[in-house]
Image 1: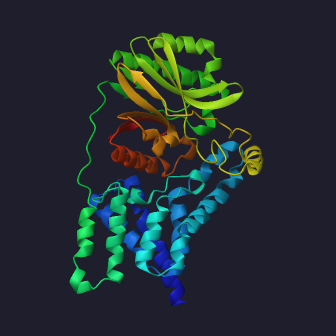
Image 2: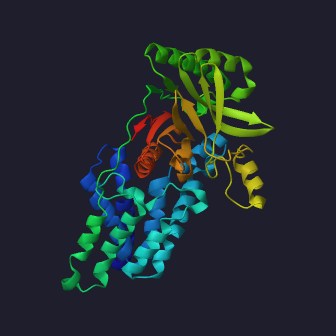
Image 3: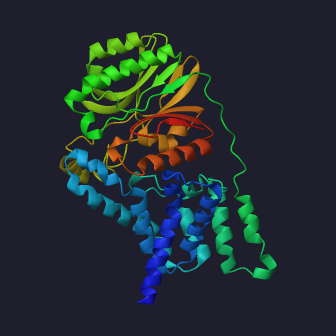
Length: 402
C-alpha cells in the first residue's frame, strides 16, 4: 500500500510543480523565484520519479492545463462531451510523457524530454515545455532548456567531487539575462475588451446592441485622439462582407481613425475567420492562417473528418485559411494580424515582425484558466521573437505584451 501511495503522490507532485506557474499567475501569486523553484523541481521530478509515476504525472498535467477545452462543446449543442474531452486531454498527455516511462536513467529522460518539447499532439501547441520558465529567472530558448535538463541529470552519473560545480555552471548558462524590449508602436492604439457571453453572442437580439457598442467605442476613440481602435475576434457576429450597409457605415466611421474588427467572411461558399481593417474609408481583410484543432478544423484523416465535423460541430468546423501571414500598414507602421489561437503559433512571427495585433474570443472557455495560459503563451512568443503584441479580447485578456 505504501509503495502505491508513493507512486501516486510523486506523480501528482510532479504535475502540480509543472503546472504551478499557471495557477500562481491566475491567482496573482506569481513570483520569479517561486516560479523558478517549482519549474526546476518539476523537471527534476520528471527525471527521477519511479517509472510508474510517469503516467500519473502526464495524465494530471493534461487535466491541470486543459480541463477547460471541453467547455466550448456546450455551445455546439453537445455539452455531454465536456467531461469526455477533459479526460481525453488527460490521456493525450499521459501518452505524451509516456516515453519517459521506459527508462530510469535521468540523462536519457532528459534527452527524451527535450525531444518531446518539439512535439505538438494533433497540432495543439499550448503545452510548451519551456513555457514553465516564462516568468522565472531561467530563459525560454531551447538551448536554455537543454542546459537545465543536463544540469539536473548530471548528478546521476558524474564523479561528484571532480565535477560537482558543473551542474551549477550549466544552470548559470540557462539564466535569463533580460530580453531586448521593443518600444511601443509610434501610434496611439485603443484596445477594446468586451464582455459578451458566448451563449448570447450569436443570438439575433445580440446583434443590434453589439453593433451600437462598436460605433460608440469608435466615436469615443476618435474623441480621445487615438490613431487605431481594435475590437476582439468575431466582435461583429455575422458574415460582414454580406452586409453592405454595415460596411458603408464602418467606412464612414473610419475617417481619421483606423478601425480593426473581427468578423466572418464567406467567399465561394467557404467560411473564413477574418479581421477587417477600415482605414479612411478603405477596407482590407486578413484571413486567419492557423486554425484551432478540433475547433475550426479536424486534424485527422479525411475519412474521420466529416463524421466528427457533422456529429460534434454541426458541420461548422470547416473554416479555410490564408496561404501566408497577413500584415496591415497603418500610417506607415506594419502590424502582423493574428486571430486568437494563431497568436500563440510560431508561423505568425516568421519574417519581419515588430508589432502584432491579436484578437481573441475567450468567452468560449469562461470561467477557466484559459485566459491566463493564453497570456503566458503570448508573453512567451513576445519574448522569444522580440515583438510587441496588442491584444484585444472578449471576456478577458486584453492588453499590451512586450
